[in-house]
Length: 213
Image (cartoon, rainbow, N blue to C red; front, side, top):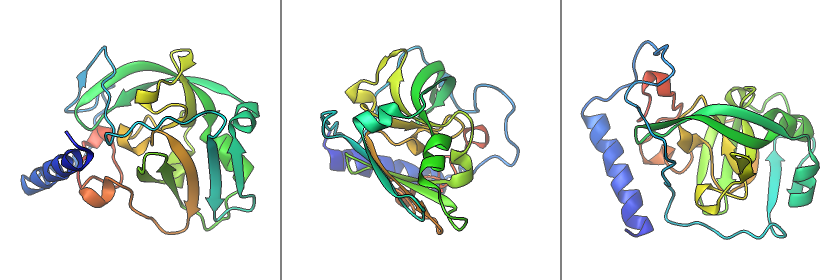
């Protein structure tokens, strides 16, 4: 399937679910497995049909927007930042979940401290090397399990899973965790990302099944 066909199919799926009244639940589930999800032992690959090959010598991560210290980190500089390891669950909007994923990388709080966002910054807009983008409220990025990950299961993140670096925000559906990440822009006003403008939820809470706008 071509990238364009894939995008059209996903957009039509969101439109159908909205038409059927697939609204978010009024009360969040307290279960570890969010409603509507099924566990998998595998790790399905979902992307835009593009898996860019990014040499580490050319990879950079830009932190900009409403910050006092805009910076562009190369791979060596990123690796020199404090590293963390975290185990969390992974929930895809296509109804599969994977428990106990071991990620390693740099905490979003560390990048926040480095960039020093201004008080008016309330959102983060993530951009990726494959043309993808997504938006997340800044307060959701400050959870203690959010990070820009460079390893999975103790090994470098494979290209098909968004390597060399991807965003992990476990408390939201996984489309909010941009693969192949290259930039984080801090904004005062929300700016919808790739799937958000195509009918997907802006808040993406798995425990209320907040899948579609």
